[in-house]
Image 1 (spheres, chains in turn yellow, brown):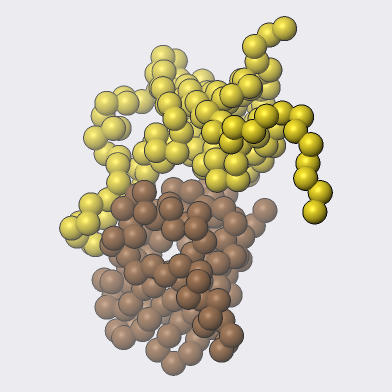
Image 2 (cartoon, one colour):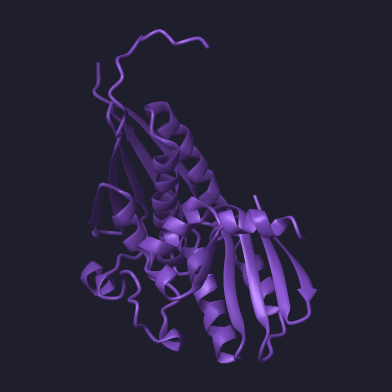
Length: 155
Length: 114
């Protein structure tokens, strides 16, 4: 038997489909036994990756975004890919990150938190930048150590 | 999936109740609603986010932009009723240090008087 199940969803790179991808991830993550908070983290991280594609990949042209999910027993691997414009990660990296306490309100950035959130909410994030952008993200199930098939206590 | 904002004016306080999901699709609706507020010196704008069921960096960006606008026009801006999820988002991005944020515990009490 294969070590994982693979699920792939392909949608038009339009804002109205971002929530569809989020819902799909939420459903798949529930199957693996992630906690409520972990599932919310996965939804945000995937939503950020898909939103990036919707906004930057095709420069107004029609395109598609592909979300692939590898479901392992103890982790989920999510890939978000497009076939549009790639970007310079090192350059982008200098413009992201959390806000600092002493920042001038008038100068606060109004974007650029997407990549930072992906990085913070997932256990591993990798970017591949050849012929479009592919984001690979991994999150591990932090299941409580309870033996399977234990009978439920009836109260 | 949608986002909906209801405003209630109370003297120098403008209360907005935001409900729904804030992402790249619903963002323009929220942005338009916030832009429709006439800000003046001494006005406090209080947005209740207790019914926001999803928010990502798009939502954070909207609130940062609006916060800047309010400060520029000498008003006050406050976010209230944040769920633990939202508090976490504001904390990991460092925004909780910059903006006036209250969690949902406080709002449950103040809701009684509304």
